[in-house]
Length: 126
Image 1 (tube, rainbow, N blue to C red):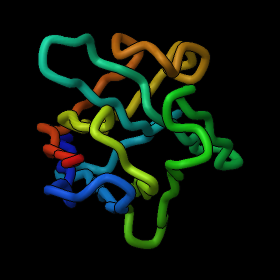
Image 2 (spheres, rainbow, N blue to C red; image 1 turned 180 degrees about the vertical axis):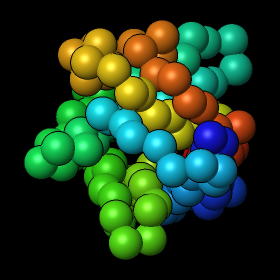
Image 3 (tube, rainbow, N blue to C red; image 1 turned 180 degrees about the horizontal axis):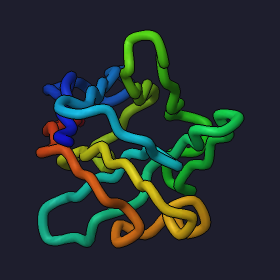
C-alpha cells in the first residue's frame, strides 16, 4: 500500500490550502488515518487524525480551530483543509495510516502508523 499526498504549495499568510491523500495498491484496512508535518530541523509533529469507525477526529494543539480533517469513503480520499495559515505552518505534510489498536490509542505518535506517503510541501509566506 502506498499513500500519496497532494495539494501543497505556496500561500500567503492568512490563506488556505486543501491537501488530499489517496492510497494506491491493494485494499487495506486501517484504524486511523492522519496527517503529520515536519519543518526543517524539527521533529515530525502530529496534525490531525480521523478514526475509521465513527469518524471521530483529533487535532494537534497548534492547528485546532484552523485545520479540518475529513474523508470521502466513496473516493477513498483523506483531506486536510487548512485555514488561517501562518509561516509556522510551513512544513512537509505527510499522510499516514495505522492498522492496529495501538494506532488508535497512540494516534499522536508517528511510530503508531504503518503506512506513510512521501509528503507534500506547504510554504506559507509572511
